[in-house]
Image 1 (tube, rainbow, N blue to C red):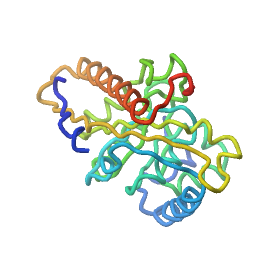
Image 2: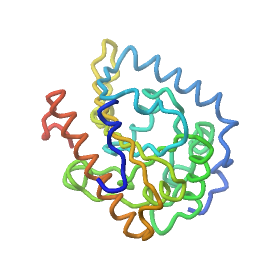
Image 3: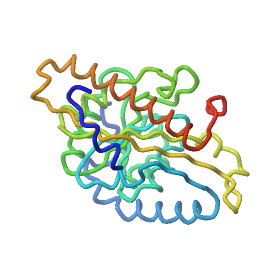
Length: 247
């Protein structure tokens, strides 16, 4: 895999006026409180099976690139990880004052999914360079079936651009089971809900090896897409998950 490191796998829009500050220091208490409440609920209701759960606990800034079967991945992954994740969030969610308030308190920031989201890209780069974890969905929205990256569907190259400019690693993550958590019985006591999470290899881009940035983004996107597919296959093999049971 040219220009990327994989040895670690074996070891382990224009800003909205409601978008909040670029710095997330003011929202730390709100984030910790939300995680504490979420973990208290998960302990009693959801069973999580994870591959390489230590991988996201590395120090320093990086991009957490996640598959997107439902809108619950940020909630579930944020609770599972020890490190705080600051999510790049669709600007449509900021239309409502109450939702925008909570998103700001959790350290999220908005992105326009269409066009070139210059402000969101700069914001993400700044946060990663400050040593933070930025969560991003390379598919650009919920994707299922043949459109899902898990089955070879396309991804947007924004994550590649951010990683290149910030000179930061990307950690791919596949999450299965979130779509079933929309049912009330999944949250009943005794762990009736199920989640499967796989963290992959930290993918590091060396700028000196790729002077042609456009070609580098294309290569990076293909490598990242292949890693998502590999993690999906690994989860299915390890835990006996049938492809037809995944939307």
